[in-house]
Image (cartoon, helix red, strand yellow):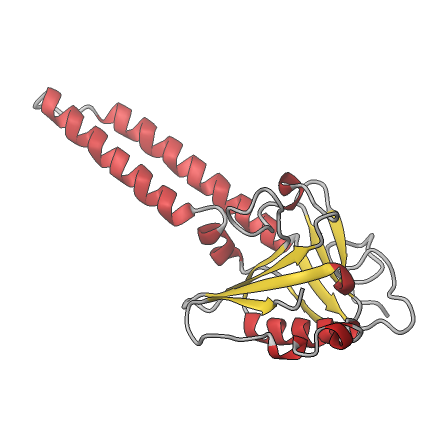
Length: 222
């Protein structure tokens, strides 16, 4: 019996259709919603900013009169709480609605809260990748596609590499087992692109990783 899951319209978890013969799932994962909230939605920075603004308002109001007028402070605090709460909820739903899948043929990204989108990225169309490992234990794995395979930034966000807008890079954001995921992707990519070894005999030597908080090239063959 097929396991039940939130997206019952899917043929399999994270996949829009049953995998064809010869294709198998090598890795699956979803974003860590807390890390996604901090890294993609910048909730920590926003909380600090709003907190400073609230303190500034309190300081200003206290200088106008010896008696505290709490109404403006309560109103501002309520608006801040509602804004941050809404963003946290958005981050949570974005993470829970997303599923990343790596097979021996492609990378599949099911994303979207209201409207679910599925991106099928054949390994042969991926020409590069970069990994970012954070000290908190989560990682980003960004994929560089051929120039003719451009995906709109708005369709991808928050599952895109930050500050890369001209040629957006689909990104497996805030995953908790990023080192293993990177190794799986590298092996699958090399297997799917064996023909490159004729033109690029050192392709399998192109991978390097530094131990801490680093951004590194995963596939630099092309």
